[in-house]
Amino acid sequence: MKTKVLIVGAGPCGVLLSHYLLRRGNYKIDIYDRRSDPRTISFSNYRAYPITLSERGLRALREIDGLEDVLKAQGVEITGTIFHIKNGKSKFVSKKKPLIGIDRTALVINLLEQLTEKFDDSQVSIHFNSKCTQVDFKAKTVTFENETTEELIVNYDLLIGADGSGSVVRNHLLKTEGFECEQNYVRSQYKTVFLPPPSEEGHNLKLGKMHGWRTEDRITMLAVPQRNKTVSGVVFFPHDNNQVTSLSSTEDVRQFFSHNFPEIGKSISDEEVEAFLKRPISKVSRVWCNRYHYGDSVLIMGDAAHAVSPFIGQGCNSALEDAVVLNKLLNDYSDNLVKVVPEFTKHRLADGQALLELSEHTFPLSKWLFFEYVLRMNFTRMMNKVFPKYCSPFFFDMLSETTVPYSDILKSAQGWISKVKNSNDKLLQAECLHSIK
Image (cartoon, rainbow, N blue to C red; front, side, top):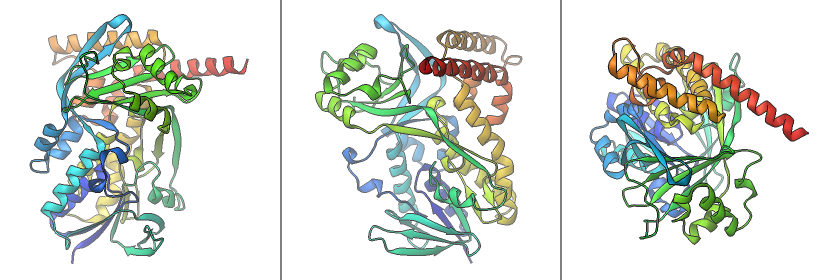
């Protein structure tokens, strides 16, 4: 008899894991997601969010025949980042291994399409617009509510909570003995921005490069030109005392982009200016857990287990890597869930917690310490190139260009991470005291 796996969440992690499990031949998969089917929604109706797939994520996706080629054809190969400085100057930082820039929803659509092409309804069933409302770990059942508020109770042998940072599965784990979880928001919020293909007087953002800006008051923008010559971008800003939340008119928005990001200000359309003004501010959650399993029948993965800030570009990549780790454990223990489920925590917990540290404390708030970061990067890269046997790669390069465990990378960079953490804490405390005065 096949093992019945119930996956809550049809994001990259949940759908990729379905591929892995179904290839093994002894699993029946049910996927439930509270959102609508992304394959049926037009671009204008979903919140697009650009992501970058690095070596970790690409390694996970390579297991699906032909998928990497499809993503490369739809996405953009990114060979480095151009940091735009005032007065039109810029600095290019290259990458040894290119990233793939693609919209998150496009990734999910491709994973879903390949899943339904390769496996029939007897092997996998996918249910959208189904909100998880209750989990009974003893009875091994999950209750869902559909669009008509009709309740559906589904049983499982293995439950996977891949339902994001606001995970309902994880919240029910809080009722179990010994499970601990901390969830809060990172200091930055964000809004997305989209540019049409440039006119003759528009932007000149190079394809195949990520573009970055950073203002004096710690507003950061990242933008990636797409194959169709549009540009997808994200503006990150502190949750208080910032320009973005005070924007109250289209004139304010246009002035904001023209002053802080002139290359963007040249091309942003009147429609996008108005859309940016009305677009809701999005918050970024961080999630820390002391374990990722319950008994031998429940796992949480991806953002449900270790949601992080987007600043080092590892959120989606780490979620995809979770599926790789679980698949390897299934190989190692011959699909014996009694052993596999608790082993997932043993193999992944240290990396998930290390990823939180790296995401929060890689980049300093201080512009002088950021200058030191650039110097360290250039020096380490030079030494690694000249003496590769004796000098390890720069730790940030290991994050995006290797599959070295996050916990090992944190150990190698602990001195820098601690320095940034102390500096950021002091700077934020000083700002807090200043605002009180």
